[in-house]
Amino acid sequence: MTFEAVIERDVSVAPAELGVRRARFWTLRRIATPIVIVLVLLALFLWIQTLEIDSIMARTLNADYILLRTREHLELTFIASALVAVLAIPAGIVASRTTSRLLRGTILTIANIGQATPAIGFIILLAIIWQIGFQTALIALVAYSFLPVLRNTMVGLSQIDPSVTESARGMGMTPGQVLRRIELPLAVPVILAGLRTSLVFCVGVATVATFIDAGGLGDMIVNGLKLQRFPVLITGAVLVSCIALLIDWLASIAEDLLRPKGV
Image (tube, rainbow, N blue to C red):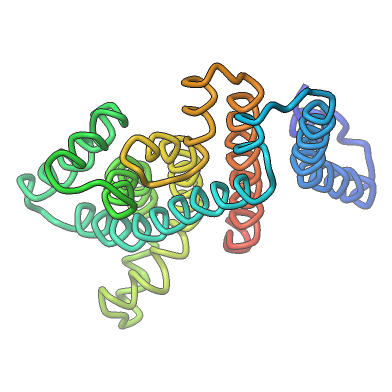
């Protein structure tokens, strides 16, 4: 039974007690993910300590190498997500405002192509056409993560009650003021959900950046497969999973904090 169902069923409970239950629910929600991540990383560390590390694994299973690859992975993820936010939100506003079906269709088609193309094929194709390295991986990540933010921006703006915007215009607001002060704040929860999805996409897709020499934790995964060193493979996979969980958790906290009151 969901938390909301429990609240609806237990109508006889005093409001103060309901407030305590809600507080406990949100507290548990906020601490559960980091606790799980810490326990998983601790278990991974203890397991590695029990292994006999040969010279090949020692080149990868060391703090300097892991920290370097983790930093590269995070740089790819956050820079790509920031670019997606800067580009996709304005594009979503334009697509939701325009009366031109051709312009709206063009924006959606370009965004769909980026995500419909397999990530590894798209990133290698870019590398063949252009060059290998960090910038090419960044472009591929932006293209692959663009659609969720674009669609959520369009959906968030389209779901606003027209009477709200009409009232704002009736008070003398310009279209730009209505957008900044009324529509975007009301669409924030939906837009943030798209950014949250985009961040998680970026974490996963950034692993294939290793194929064009852009670094990241994909190096550990590929090295583990090529060299038949499964502890290296498992370590890389677990680290990527933990980063994805951590970023999703941080995004959920930001989503709660930035949500307008009463929405």
